[in-house]
Length: 488
Image (cartoon, rainbow, N blue to C red; front, top):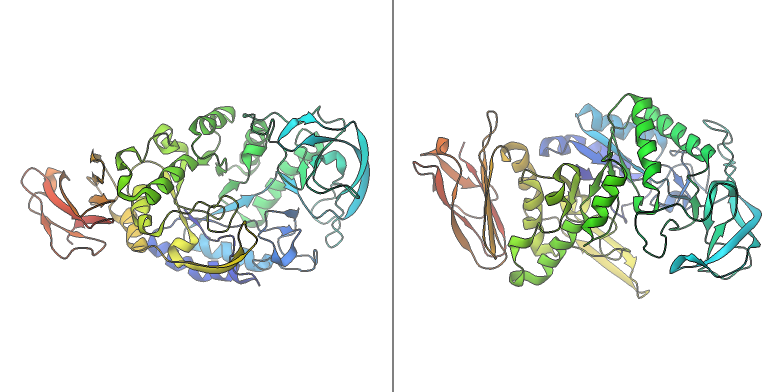
């Protein structure tokens, strides 16, 4: 799949047009699923990335928050982009943000208790009354598509109270649950609350509305999969039920991948998978951490450990592997980008092996240039270069990464593996180094005896002849990767 956006993607309705125009190119490369950003109106109107959702039913159709289009375009442009992808046989994965709502239209008064931001289980006040923007009337849309009344009973907490200090978290007191919803981990005491108006998913009316919206959204745009935002802050039972209902209502086995971003804590990813009964995949944040460490350490990193404590190793069927994403890119909240020199190796590791479902990040295929503010408050100009050889790596997956896999992981600075191919596809041999140039004998299969292999990435001009036993002596450059495939 491909994440066809980043945090600083151009606004002014350009993205949906770009998706439509690039559909043929993506099909040619071998990308068969595209993850699109949140497509509904957010509190920032035409400037918002969509992760501060205001009206889930406004896909760029109504004059709300100062604009009709979203940052990415109008509803019609969105539908046209989806149609263009589907026409090329590319599945559409939509971004679902059901943890919170932002940009309420009217204030309400209700009772809350203030909690310690670092331990949300600890109350630091007696119950008292506040006023906050928890009433959503959607004046631009009215009751079209839905007449549901969002008010303070639909939320479990807020971070704004009229006349109160900023930076506080207020737990709302109502009849839909005592305290926060139960999470699988005790980070910050309880990490149910993340930001804005936290949706109270124990309220049966809220659950019914979100189930209804899921079917409406599918029937409106015809998506094939969902990327679920911030699942670590939501009850596993909610999403298990929501996905079951969505799949039942649509009659489709909708693909789902959750964002439970917890680098270095594989046990939490596995616990979440168990809690949701395997109903969704997860992004492999543990593998991303290993890739990041390897890119920073250079030749001091033992490549043999690259898959240790990763989801793709522990549960490959439910692992979506990434090299970077919109949260890890420079200047973002979870900033941890993979160093540029290592990205060809990282993409070979996720694209050309048998395990995991790889996801390509937009700047790695197209490059990116943007301005943004760092954590120090200063503004920076960022250039992200297209990954060297990325198209060839993606095409190599489509054409050659099939069949039996043999690993050659005996050297700390050089990894190799081969794919034997299957009845319809030829195989390949992959060799990478984080230090010096290497040569390594590897077996591709006796059926290649006498055939020549060449470096698909063009690092070397010479060819490798496979011996009578199916072995060849393959090379890779220093600090890089080569992919050897049969000569046509």
